[in-house]
Length: 118
Image (tube, rainbow, N blue to C red):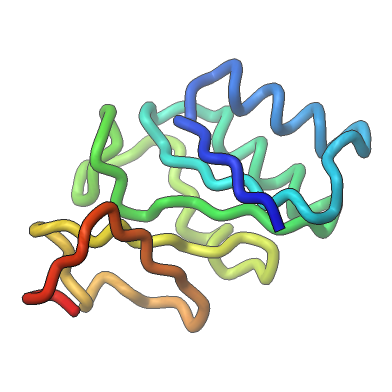
C-alpha cells in the first residue's frame, strides 16, 4: 500500500478528485489529506472517493492552515467521516485530546514519539 500525503490545497484536491473519477488512481494508493482551507473542494473530493468506493484518509486535527480544530467551518465534512471509505487520522501532538475520537475507525499519525499521550 502506498499512502501519499497531500496538503488539502485546491489544485491537489482537484487532481485527486479527477484521478479517482477517471479511474487513474491505483487500488493500492490511499491518499492522506491534511486540510488547510475551509473550501468546498475537500468535500467534493471526499464525495468522489465515496461514490467510487475508494478509501481516503483525512487528518481530523490539522496543524496547518485555516481549519484548525474548534474553528467553525462553512464546508463541514464530519458527516462524511461516517463513510466506510473515509477514515479519520489524528495527529499526535501536545494539543491532542482523546475525547475528539467519535468514530469507530481511526488512525494515529505521529511525527515524534509522545510518551505522555501514548
